Structure formats: C-alpha cells, structure tokens
Length: 437
Image: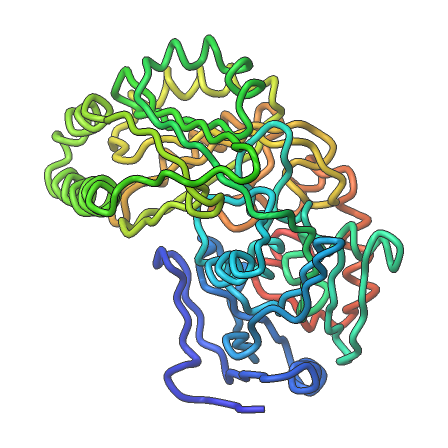
C-alpha cells in the first residue's frame, strides 16, 4: 500500500469550487490494501473520485484513498447480465469495457468522467420518465466498513444497507465493487433541434411519454429551447453516426470552442450577456443521427461552469419553470448558461432525489468566474417551495434540518450511519452539515 505526503495531498474539484489538503494519500491496489487503508486510519478517511462533484462531498482532510489503481471489470455473467466492477472505474472506462462485452448500461447521464462509485453515491441520473438514476441499476454493493471488514449488500443481503448505500454519500464505508444489471448493447436514435419554448412546454407530457429519453435546454433570454429525443432502435440496427467532420464542427468547435468564447466575452462585458444568450438560442441547428447508446447519452463538455440541480415533483415543473421564466430575467447579474430540464421515474433508495416520487430535474449553471450567488439563491427559494431535493453532487445550501423534511427515510439513514460508523471515520465537513452528524 503506497502512502504519499507530497503535492498529491492537495485536491480541487473540476469546477474549482472546492479544495482540500489531506494529511496523506493512500493508493490501494487490491482489496486487502483497501481494507487496511480504512482500518488503519487514525482519524477520518474519504475515497477520492474524479472530483466532478460541485460540492465537497469527496473532500478528504485526513487520509485520502486514491482509487485510481483499483479499476476494471471483475466479472461478467452473460446469462444474467450482471457485471461487477471495481469502484475506481470511471464511467468512460466502464462504457468501453461493456462495449467489448456486448453489454450496455440501461441509462446514463451526460457526463462520463465520474467513477462508478462516485456516480451512484451522489445520485447521478439521466433522463426518461420510465427510467431511474444509475443507482437503480445496482444489483449489489461490496463495502469496506470502518473497522476494515468487508460486507456485501443486496435486496436479499443486508437490505437496509442496500436501500441506503446505493446513494450513500460515502457515509457507510468505502465501496470496493459495484455489481450492475446491464443489458445487451443497443443503438439510440438521437434527434436534437431548436423549438419555441412555449411549444415545448405545451407538449411536455406527450414528449416525455412518447420518447425513451427526452430533455430540453432553456435559454433565459431567448425564445427557443434545444430539445433532445433519444429512442432505442431494434436489435441489429447499424449505427449511423454523424461524420467525423460534423462531430468536430458541432461538438468541439461550436459547443466548446465557440460557446467558450461567447462565455468569455460575456464575462468581460456583462451588458452583452443577454444578447449573446438570445443569439445562442437563435443559431441552434437541428441534427439527427444514431450510435451505440453511451455515445449518444454522453456529451463532451470543456467549458467550465458552476451548477446547482434540484429534483421537484413532476407535477410541479410548470409552476417552477414559470417562476424562473418570470424572475430570472430580473436578476442584477445576467445568466450565461441555459437551464437543463430532465425527468426520471420514482425509486426506493432512501436518499435518492427521486425517492417515492416521479421527478423533474432542473439544473442551473453559470459560467465560471461570473456571479452566481443571487441566481442560485433565487433558484433554491423557488424549488424549495415545492419540496425540491438537491442533487448531492451539485451546489446547495441546505443542512440536515432542511433535508430531514424532504426525505421520509432521512432518520433511518442517519441511524444506520451512526450504527456502522459510530466514531465518524467517514465524515467530512460536507457530510456533517447535510447529515447533522
């Protein structure tokens, strides 16, 4: 087990919103080393993921466990579709490994930089009214508890730990492996186009029902929304992706280079933000293509931003979006980025944002370096009025007293955490705030 105390002890997340310096970093290469890294920790210990959370959920201030040497597929069962993967494996690597096995995740979000353990622990999700988040695809977890013991949980084995641990915030232990329910590889047809926002809202229920995966982006100062429809094609369909040239032009040049330039101009000259945002919504182009599922689900994003996201009851979406449309244009500091709207099915995971309710997700963003505090506070007040639940990896101001009111199983979660980790070995300041520990 390698222990480091040099510059690698410093950590900063992708957005630059959080930073921490650990006293030491341990990089385990096998389960015995991972168990020893937890058991021998003198104070607190946290596993580091990819740093793609906008909160400090992954910050380590004493011992940090670097899982970059603990990756890869452990086993794959073709008959059942169950695939067990080590916790440090990124979604990007996992998707490539599943591709080689002829398998696929049922649903994904639009970022693949996260580790599988970090993605499920914070409640990462995609879109689709018949689909849950990534955690709903978990069939079993193996965790290292505070004393270094290794336990497995599933619907039949330690079911309470399974119900809590699939979105566990790293509060129960360090996940060592994740067993996923996968399915045979499939092709998605993607249709992306600008549409008047009023038309999108009028047909929202129909679009969610008629498409496997539907989402849209609202530009606060423009009339158009960018809609995205992804639908499964029959088995054996040959993908028809965009040409390499068009992929480069539209995704790299337009969505990253050109949009990044627009954002930098808006940050430097604030009065230009509103017309630039309107321009961005007006010049959107339509495209249709098909490809293997993960290549359609995932989007390459190089422009840095800060983000907050809340899940609200599905039926509350029109009210919430109506308030945002009315009040965001009045903000003193203009908003550069669009708002992303998605939907997801209810689930039974204790601290899932979709626990026991079909949900709509609203994710707001601001270009890095631009003022966002007033915008994010306004957003929290609007979604809070309908019982909104914050994404655990996105920026929010809530504490345990607020969250207890929004999660029926909150006290069960914290009681189980206290039972399994009575000394608080897995806590950090973020978890102490949101769990009241």
